[in-house]
Amino acid sequence: MKILVTGGAGFIGSAFVRMSIGETDWRVVNLDKLTYAGNLENLAAVDGNERYRFVHGDICDARAVDSILSEEKPDAIVHFAAESHVDRSILSPEPVIRTNLHGTFTMLDAARSHGTARFLHVSTDEVYGSVAAPLDATEKFPLNPSSPYSASKAGSDLLARAYFVTYRLPVVVTRASNNYGPYQFPEKLIPLMIANAMENRALPVYGDGMQVRDWLYVEDHCRGILAALEKGRDGEVYNIGGNRSLPNLEVVRKVLSLAGKPESLIEYVTDRPGHDRRYALSSEKLMGETGWRPEMDFETGLKRTIEWYAANSPWVARVRSGEYRAYYEKNYGGRTVAR
Ligand code: NAD
Ligand code: TYD
Image (cartoon, rainbow, N blue to C red; front, side):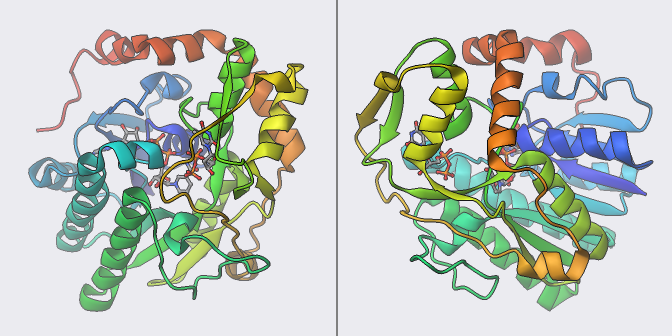
């Protein structure tokens, strides 16, 4: 089995690549543009493995994608590559729409013309928009996105569906809740709060901090994707949730308590425009069809994540300074650029 992973240098994609190389005998090709969120240091553990290859390229570049598929002929594509941050999508929507919509179109169309046997599109619970308590969104919930990010993901989910219905491309869509764990870029809530707490800087909480998110440990997400990839039915959508919904303020307080820092570091700041109040997800379908379930309880996962950030403060410093970008030049020197 050979898989093409897009966005494998990001937070979740790199965990998926490390897991696929470490726990299966698959060959893995990783296509990544190395935006600010792509960091090859996340993949140092698989560098040099003969079953792993990195290709530097843009999923919006149809010629590059076509040449990779012609050369590699993967059995499956696992499509992670995206602009993934809501705040950035509010400040600057254009790259989000380009990569998430047009890039997904490019990947789907290339898979169609190459007859790829499986296309797994990685999406998010944010496509359902805010879900009123006490409901949990099932896959049948209407799409109701609020931000340019979630709208672009909803659009890409619908394109994936259209490629299944129209061309019978064997597509599976997964929609996961908020991920956390090692190697997450410190712009998202949990790693930002950990990094700031470690440096005794203020922890910015948007609005009243009572927005609810469902937290999923990144390895549980990757195992859910593997389950959907291997056992999911063509044309179906599968939610992957952590089954742990918490208000942001509670998450921030847990971070401070585990890091041994005072709550006086919390700073209430202006709310995000269009901020969804509550995400909550039912994963009954994936659990029932594949036997997958989230294994990591939130307190253990958060403790492990804080320990990882504490032990890897040079990684955080390199990411925050931009120095991590030198890794590609030093270790790859442009050798594997597609074309
Ligand atoms: P990330 O921002 O950490 O990584 C994205 C990766 O995609 C980076 O390596 C980046 O270089 C690459 N990329 C961006 N644009 C590209 C392009 N045009 N061509 C090729 N590569 C490109 O994101 P993440 O948090 O790892 O999320 C991965 C996927 O999972 C995304 O599709 C996201 O929507 C989805 N998701 C994320 C979460 C979460 O909590 N982070 C939850 C549910 C779903
Ligand atoms: P984030 O990690 O950006 O994920 P998403 O918006 O995709 O859910 O944010 C998670 C929650 O935390 C969201 O309700 C916004 C909030 N938040 C803050 O309160 N402060 C912050 O500095 C950040 C980045 C997020």
